[in-house]
Image 1 (cartoon, rainbow, N blue to C red):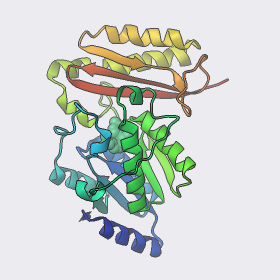
Image 2 (cartoon, rainbow, N blue to C red):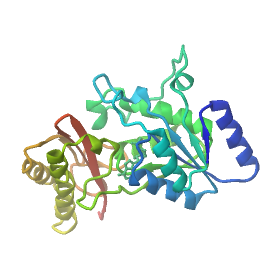
Image 3 (tube, rainbow, N blue to C red):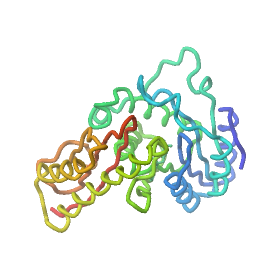
Image 4 (tube, rainbow, N blue to C red):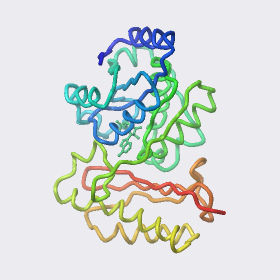
Length: 284
Ligand code: AMP
């Protein structure tokens, strides 16, 4: 595995790989790798002949007061895990090269970036869309892999790639969870033992919603949301920021549960903010 920190070197390697006829699979990350990231790298290995992972803690997607400074960073550990999972190029650009003096362009997906996560984190998705565009330009992959864990990011990246006619396939890998249901996240390390014990209530709430929709044929979004709120309320350490029942492509609230149904939520446990979601296909 080669660790690349300079952008022109990344472009050169990518051009050479394309000229050799390689299929480039790309997994963008902010590091602090866990099994969720590794599952995407394994998918990339299966679907491509050259696996590139980027590691960049993108300041543009953190708001003021968010955890940019204390976000966990350990390049040596991440490099070992990435290598073991089959990464051939680890692209870890430097901030001053990604955002040089005078940098002034942003990508915004206006229909999707101000709702749900975007409502509470203004500018977050503009930061995501901009850096993903830059990374896709640099790495020039045939296929890029994102996790369902960040459902809105997945929807937004797909939309952006379609809207801007970017020549890349987008694949979404399923959410990887701990045995007790907690979705893996680099931020889980912030949880103290009591918060860690309480956190799986988010997954339990989503499973309760799923079973109401699938087994009990509940079609009223408000009743599904009530079930989620009731379940989360059983854990006093967890405060629900939002839960919603939305269309899985447009992120618009559903009046009736049918089609592609996304149920995303965000919650706070002390100083830590966690998100999770389920995506269902519901017969008309
Ligand atoms: P991050 O390093 O948090 O930016 O995440 C990098 C990629 O890994 C994103 O596409 C995430 O959606 C994905 N990811 C993060 N956590 C998980 C998880 N638990 N399961 C699957 N994918 C994940």
